[in-house]
Image (tube, rainbow over all chains, first blue to last red; front, side, top):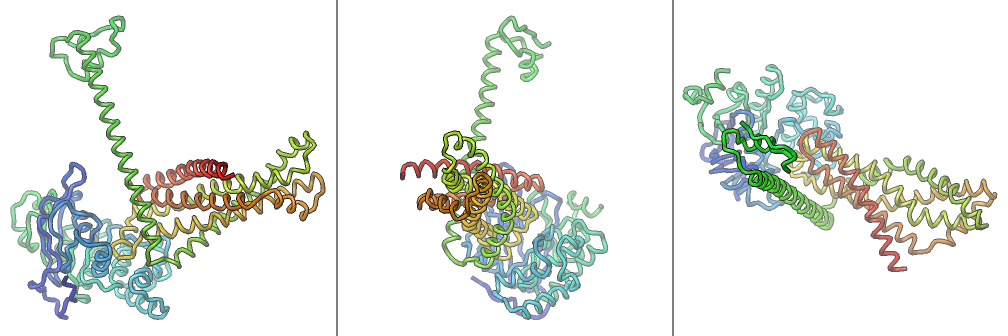
Length: 258
Length: 301
């Protein structure tokens, strides 16, 4: 298994190193096929946006990538691990290297922001020293510009702030891959633009590869190096924003026209 | 034009049958053929519905079985969640203490006051402490504590885990490699199993204290005399069975509530349903366990 860290400090996409590779992925729920022969690959330090309408299978796709859902067939290789065949222990090992930012932030609402950020540090890295915890928490919060919220509860924060804290909580474990599930949904355009900038900053600072699941065309344009369009569960088009805009696919044209 | 028969011909819903099968364009069947077709359709629909319900029930049984097996597997093998277990033990004990004190104290008073006239009519009023102690320790204490905990802890666990499930908090723990099952489920079930016996012992003490106050008001007996009578009338099996029963109640409440919460779906409606299922199913299982333990004890005795 290839679990090497992504080497260079440069932010140039390393096309020789595939960090995620998906081939012929299929997933059905009952009679309904949600993913149908999906193919995509993500290279080191690349931001890939998966663009599609609601219900097109985008969230199912990233849940398959982190092993939350088991695909019916197909290959999912993440950092060299064959995800569907991993044991629980191996899956946990992989998940420590993959950050997942949920659509609804998924902050633990019974805990304060400090406790939310402490939780993965204590449980995954076994850090219990108060000073070390404080340092890491404050650094992480500073990176998303929300250090003043440290003693607040998630219910006291706005949607955009929750998204930022959610990203800070995943970044605290220094992942090699970031998965963003609808990072700008439900946000006003200004806050959405701030989140888009944060996604780019994360890539530049941590040299992560990312998949950004979105139905927001401006989010896909601002944050991605490449876009894959997921239409009715199929990965149909693959290219830069301009390349996709130049295609005459009916479904995509509707995205660009709205 | 739909053919209309009347009840006098022995057909109950011929118009409906024509509407269902849209036979307005067809020549009318004989009465018996149409009747048989309708009957066959109804039977087929019922059979299909029954099969679907049976499949769903069997799937649920399999899921519950896997859930329980997973609990034992993660409870027995490390890593253990000591810190969270202690936290849950404190929360469970702390949450239920006031309610248990209040209800068991009143139950002791009421039970004594209701038993006194019956015993007095036989001239056996001096047996009141023995009767109350056996009633409280064998049945009343564990049952009241179990039911209160089913309501208080069951709804709490079901709703808490349910809301964590529908807001993807459990998924967030899963993807960050923090073993949510061990952290959320195992600790809660173990804490309920460990704390219920302690709460039952406390509840027994409080109920007996309430009983003493009533006995004292009837015949001015002393606390020492009352508790001498109480301890003389109960034996080792009574106390042990009460503790075992309480542990089983705790396990049932914990596992049922956690299962309901952990598998909740459909947003906020699902959370309410999980809390409801947790309470109702826990209460039913408390009575079932009570009956099983009683029958087992009768065999031992």
